[in-house]
Amino acid sequence: MGRPKRVTAGGYAYHVVNRGNGRMRIFDDDGAYIAFEKVLVQALDRWPEMGLVSYCLMPNHWHLVVRPDIGEILPRFVGWLTLTHTQRWHAHRKTTGGGHLYQGRYKSFLVGDDAYFVSVCRYVERNAVRAGLVRRAEDWKWSSLWRWYAGNVDAKRILAPWPTSAGRRPSGWLERVNEPLSEAELEQVRRASGRGRPYGDPAWVEKMTEQFGLESTLRSRGRPKKGS
Image (tube, rainbow, N blue to C red; front, side, top):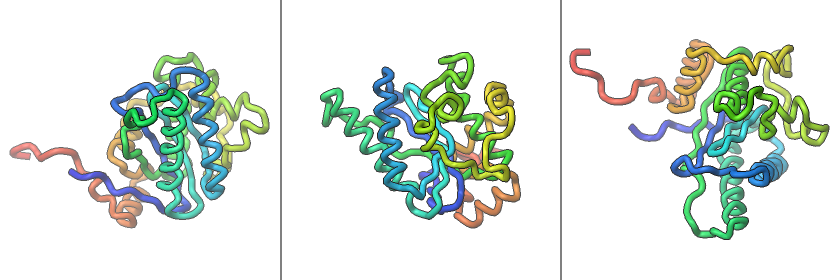
């Protein structure tokens, strides 16, 4: 099966993830995380139509939840972010021309409203806890949760309002993030990420699938078993 179709329409939330080539380590010290965040801020300044809602940087990959106001800027934004970061990463290590930093094509999927959007942001912001890097999610400095909870005004300025009915994080957010997602929630988010399928309530998923021609993302991988 070929690559899933990539949606670039404006006015929707997207979960975006990219990994180190061969799952290599991208961030090996605080300076490496800081350098990426500087590039991320520059990308947001270049494309003010792009709203960064939440993010988490992990040793060999990163997650962004973004909401572009207009269409077609998502691939330009992520392309510039990854290319610029790759160039600076190699320049700092004096390994220019030494090969790919990222696995290549980033993965993304559409995210539905309210409960589904909140579920994805919980998934992103508790990544470091799930990986055993910290005991509590707000202790991981390289995330939107830390910026929102412990950062100063300048640190918080890159975070856009949430595209939910409340327009902000729900009350008791720290405790909600620190509570594990159910196995069903984890499986649904991972399946959406792996296949590029929309993540939301069934009616919304059906609508997005038809609107953007994403039928292939809902099909099972591989050939059907004999007799099935």
